[in-house]
Image 1 (spheres, rainbow, N blue to C red):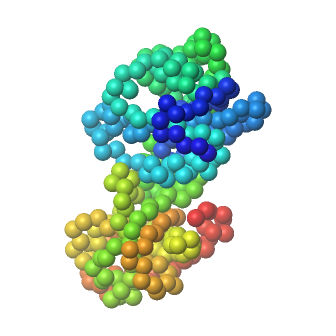
Image 2 (cartoon, helix red, strand yellow):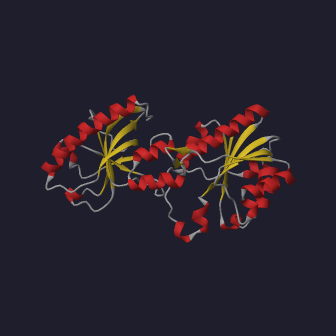
Image 3 (tube, rainbow, N blue to C red):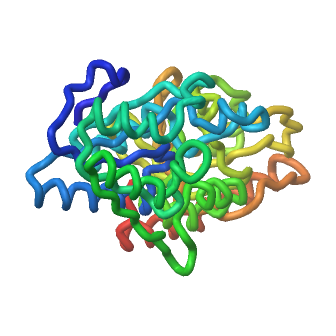
Amino acid sequence: MKFYRHIESFPRLQNAVVTIGVFDGVHHGHRTIIERMKAIAKKNNSETVLVTFNPHPRMVLYEDCKFLKFIHSRTRKVDLLARTGIDYLIEIPFTKEFAQISARKFISDVIVDKIGASHLVIGHDYHFGKGKEGSYEGLLEMGNEFGFTVEQIPPVQLNGITVSSTEIRKALHEGNISKANSLLGYEYSLFGEVIYGKQLGRTIGFPTANIEVPNKLKLIAANGVYACRILWKNKKLIGMGNIGFRPTVNGNHLTIEVNIFDFNKDIYGDYLTIYFVERIRDEMKFEDLNALQGQLQKDEISVRAILKEKTANGFKA
């Protein structure tokens, strides 16, 4: 995949199959659109182009969305899109000035003139700009005028739920990791540096790696205890993670930490990716550290059983 941060440097194609959107999550619905693009491109001997925006348009257009949280960081989204096998990714800076451009002008000047679209594939909920022009019907009219065809992909449903970034964010806020992972098609993850904590875990036999997530716009799942897989220096490990305030020790700020099973190395300053497989319980305040230790022993048994079952069922880390 070739990644262009500036549309001006993009080499115009003769027969491009194009889609447009934010693609936060690169979930089942997004990949359905991409697979359809690839099928059309293969049939017509053409190339695929995905157009996205940075930052998210809602952050620019709506004051109450200024601090919107996302399923993935920009870097992670680009990586996931690259893995889908598209030929080109174009990221357009979204500004208030850009937002003033009509849908018609965007389609004419960018999608047709600069990219060379012959076919446009959009999702069921796609809408760009103001009014009728940015709708599916408006795109059909513009396609007739500018010489491209349009195809709208119906909603993708899993277990009666329409797959969408909004639905995934809601599941993560609720701590429903199983649902979020199902809609994503892979396991939700957090990436960060191992930093020093209070080191209380090691005093009760459960040392933890405390993670600092560098991206402040990253959506953090609900507080609780989770069965996790961990990637450290290309090594796959397992453990149990906790997101929360550690009420038993009167914690006063949100922490993300993971107890890695069968592991005893100094990894301060290293980077981990934590994959969240299943949430096993709420974060709780215990009477003392002994009571916490007893619960963690039970949690470890539960987590090991979950991870053994999930691996057997083909869940990806």
